[in-house]
Image (tube, rainbow, N blue to C red; front, side, top):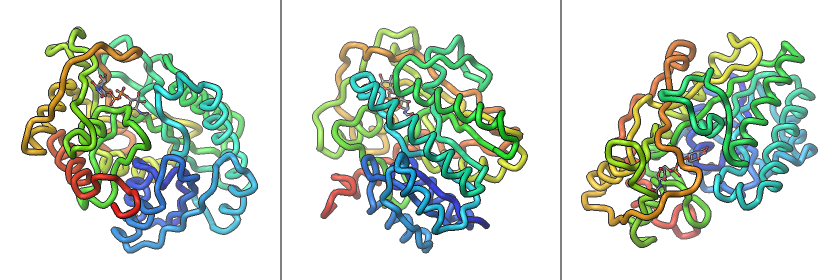
Length: 340
Ligand code: WQD
C-alpha cells in the first residue's frame, strides 16, 4: 500500500482521516501549519494505530516546503483538507480566505504534478450547494455557494475539474461533507475548535462540559416540523472511512468526480440537543434566539452515488455521534491544550 500525503492531517477531520488511512495499511505523511490543528492529535493517531505518522509543520502555500515533503517520500496519492473553514470568519475576512484556500490548492496541484502524483481526494463541502432547490441534494444539483468560504470550496472544485480536463493523468475525487460530528470512540482525538465554536455540536459539548454558558438555538420559526433547522449529521469516523473508499476508487475515476458524504437522514437542532442530552445524561441548557444569517431550513444529502460508486455508506447513528463526541469532550475538557 502506498504512502498518502494528508494536508491538514493535524485537524479534526484530518486526524480521523489519517487514522482510517493508516488502519487501511497505508503509510501517512502529514503537512499542516497547525493554525487549526494540533501536533498532539497526530501523536495520538500514531498511538492508536501503532503507525509512525510523520508531521511536516508546513504551510501548503509554501511551495518549496511542500516540494521538500514530497521529495522525502514516495507519495502515491494526496488527500487535501488544509484550509480555512469558518463561514462566519470568511464573511469578515474574504480576501484572506481566497488567498489561503485558493493558493493552497494551486500550490498543491503544482507540487503533486512535479512529483508525478496524479491521484487526489479533496475535502469539499455541502456548502457549495448554497440554498438547494430541494432535498435530498444530489451531486448534480446546482452549486451556488452563498458565503466566501463556500465559494472558495466551489472555486477549488472548478480548479480541479479544469486541471483534470486538461490532463487525463489526473484522478480526482471531491468529497462534499455534510455535517461532520462525533469523535473516535477511544476519546483520544476529536474536535478542538480554536476560539468560540461556530458549529452546533462543539458549542453544545462545551456547554455540557462547563466551558460555556447555555446554548442559543438560532431560530425556531423555520418551515420544519419543530421550527429549527435540519441538517445531515455524519459521524467523523464514517466520514474518514469515506476517504479510504474514495482513495480505493480513484483509479476508476476518469478526471474529477464529486461524491456527497452524509447519512441521508436529517435531524433538527432540537433533536440533536435531545440526543446529546441523553448521551450526556442530563439536559443541555439552551434558549431560543434570533436566526443566524445565511442559515437554510434543511440540508440533507442524496447518498446513492457514494453507495453505488464507492461502496460506502454511513453506519453510525446520531446516538453514537453524540456519545462519542461527549466521551472526547469529557476526557479532554480543554481539547489538546497543554496539560489537557
Ligand atoms: C447547524 C445548525 C445552526 C450553532 C457549517 C458549515 C459547513 C460545514 C458544517 C465546513 C444550524 C444551528 C449552530 C449554535 C445553533 N463546515 N446552530 N446554535 O451551518 O449546517 O454548516 O458547518 O464545511 O460548511 O456551513 O453547521 O453546526 O454551524 O449549524 O442553533 O450555537 O445548528 O443555526 O441550523 P452548518 P452548524
